[in-house]
Image (cartoon, rainbow, N blue to C red; front, side, top):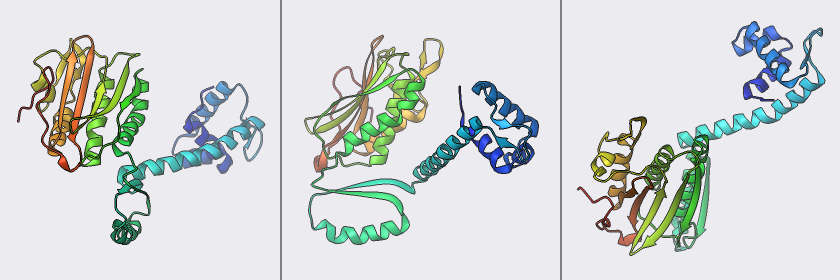
Length: 299
């Protein structure tokens, strides 16, 4: 039996309206369309959901069970939709604040009072000693929020090596945009059953987020097309393409605006790994030249 949200809304509307005609008016559909929907649901369930001869129309015991489910599930779905709408609008969510010195509390609390007046639905998480591991959390969050997209395409998302946390001077929202784009691209150009892996490593004053896929790989000499404005790489005659128009171009620009860089390593028939690198802490410097085989800076 396949139950959709519209089925639950239908049962609830008919119960509250007391009949098909009034329920159809409230739902802005024809009575015949509503009746057809109810019959289809009853065919799936294998039982009658309404006592047809009663006035007003009453639910059968099976219908009562379905109504109870609707009354439990629909409010939760509506609350989730409101929460997602708030997240998209930036009016809800969670703000993480990590503090090294206690003197910061003297000016922080008055600021937070003003903040809460304007953003009442945003949770504030304050932790001392830079205890919040921002970059690992950002990578994990991006992996989780792209998991459904990957699942629909038969791709598994996994988190690999994560080194000790490091402080990066940059815009968390912009970094998240870059990582989301790399993950979605890796999923898009992977084969069904493949795994896309995210890793976080630090070396020689640089912190690197890497997204690895096992797709067809990128031929040599295609860097300008991959990172060029509107540049894309044909997929052996198929409709899909490697690169997403402005996606990788903008991602690279965002990384470089934060003294970072975006480059890749790839082997035809094996897959690609895209790296986004940043300097650690206050000592952030322009990115070093990429290793041989990786994308070189064109600025």
